[in-house]
Amino acid sequence: MKKVLILIAVIGVMFLLGMKKPEKPTLGAEQTAAIQKAVLKSHQKMSEALEKLDVDKFFDFIIDSGLGTVIRDGRIPSRKESLDMIKKGL
Image (cartoon, rainbow, N blue to C red; front, side, top):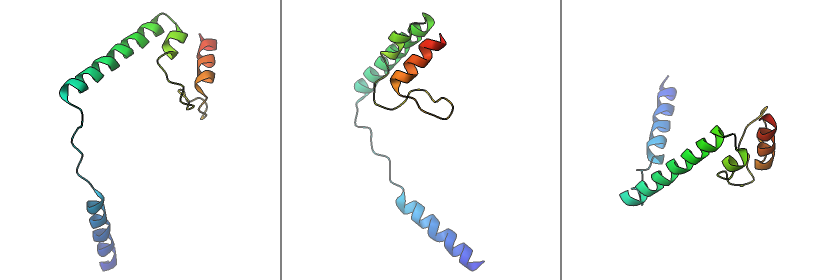
């Protein structure tokens, strides 16, 4: 029992030592507000594209990073595969 308590104490100390104080934001209030406004504007345009079933316009907002955008059957297809899959579905 004593060994378990010591182990818990050691893990607790390691956890506390590993925690860092969060860094202060490096962006000012104006920059943060501008970013939020741009994101909301993009989201609005994406929503409008989906309402019109304009998949190409919707995917204009999705970067081609080589990573997938949709998970399907446990697999992450590429951006192009996702675009083709959604076009076919519509």
